Amino acid sequence: MRLKGYQLTRYADDWVITCSSQAEARAAIAAATKILSALGVQLHPQKTRIVHVRFGFEFLGYKIKRGRQLSLPTAKIRSGARSGALYAYPREKSVQRFMDQVRRLTKRCVPLRTRELIGRLNPILRGWGHYYKRSHVRRIFNRLNRWIVRRIWSHRFKRWRNMGWKVLPEARLYGEFGLVNLVQLIPSIASQHAASS
Image (cartoon, rainbow, N blue to C red; front, side, top):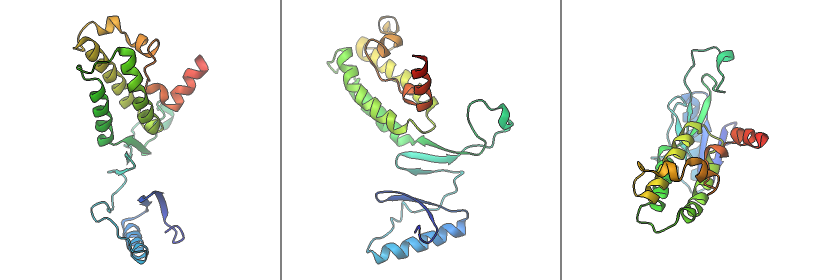
């Protein structure tokens, strides 16, 4: 496919071809079908589709999509967002699967002390966070951090709307207990944090 001039991104048997037009995309599917049938392999009919990047597509647990056109001039944008740029986010199923893992560990009936609970949570948080840390995740990592802290309070005090915030404030969970902070895994934030330490 690359020899034919197509821009191909592949991991194992999952791949994406980026094209500049719908006609080129149809030609790419035809070429891929021909090459694969010579190898005795077929394209998956439900997974093979042509989509415009404006609507996004899912690949390896990510949703990749073109951002909105911003009305502000580029010089006035301080967040690093670029008008019409491509962004990758964790796909919703990946977020839900991650939350289900955390939920299972932080059920109120799980007989673990807070330190042991955090010891079991950390590898899951670190693994998932490192996989997605280079995508557009600052907002979702912040939301998940707050949710994980509430889950720990709920596990310890049987309700999160309790005195957990007094006995186990976030600073203590992240400091003394070593809870992994997802936001601190984002490379730009991690480098700022390392420079200030």
